[in-house]
Image 1 (spheres, rainbow, N blue to C red):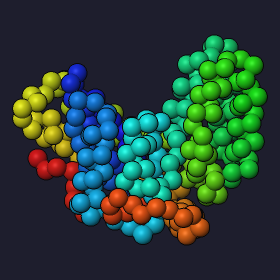
Image 2 (tube, one colour):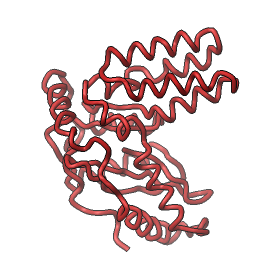
Image 3 (tube, rainbow, N blue to C red):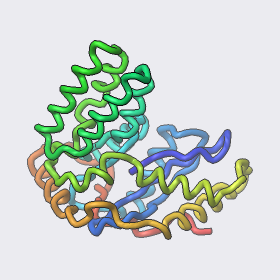
Image 4 (cartoon, rainbow, N blue to C red):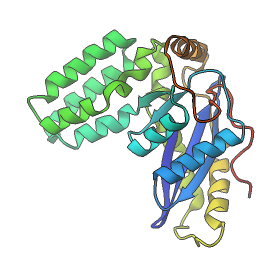
Length: 257
């Protein structure tokens, strides 16, 4: 998972969080910049590759819908499977509807998060489209915007016990909540020092101490096998660097204090 956390008015960090084959979460690294931009995102992914983030399997990346993050992941790991965060997508669509329609929207997205397999998921998406089309053209457009990323995990036909953890970016966003608690009232960092890096390293590593294994972790071998099948059946262009592994965290931790 990749996501950005705003530290101050002029500093943002893009953070990478990985999940290994046992379902344990790891803060892999972060990169600092003025915003969640292409330079910062590419710097982070390139550094992970240099530090030994390698694998022979296809990568599953769960993203919040940022075009910048998606482009960076695809540039470094061209055969990766991108899953759009359904929580963010529901939130984006809800913002385009009147309050009287949000209950039905929530019901349909709950079904989408719980159904098993691609066929059942596509049926729910069809219902969503039928529901949104007469209400709001922009809401319907937002649904279509996600494309195949909306049902990437369903397409792999993995058990729906994995949906709670892998259909949203909640795992990394929860770590950000704990990070902000650790940072407290610190909202200004001198750009000419490594102050922001040190504070964020401390806060993320403290947040990591409270990590638990993801829900449905016993079904991860099924996901690994599904990604391997896709990797074997889908022709891909050579990657620009070492291909990462969803089963192994980086060999180093976040920057030390």
